[in-house]
Image (tube, rainbow, N blue to C red; front, side, top):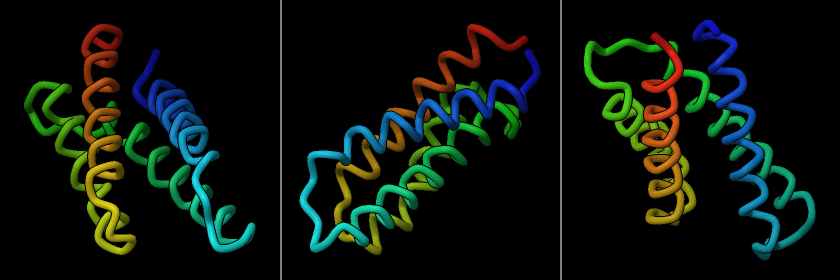
Length: 105
């Protein structure tokens, strides 16, 4: 499996998992809930897609952590919800990095 295909799969799975986590949260109205879930899916999809396709010359686990953390920062800053957003991004990045290390050459 190449990095592009693996990245699409990881991004889609990570995006869906993040949206599922958001379902029980309360929002002002339905429109804001849809916007938040769409933005979260796109952000998590890109984290999952980029990890196997960006080579920093370091371990994929560390690379995943760095990408998950830094790509989650803008959303955390805008929403002022730091720990859950950054934590899920970093944890997801680490998990994808571990899977990448095990699957891709």
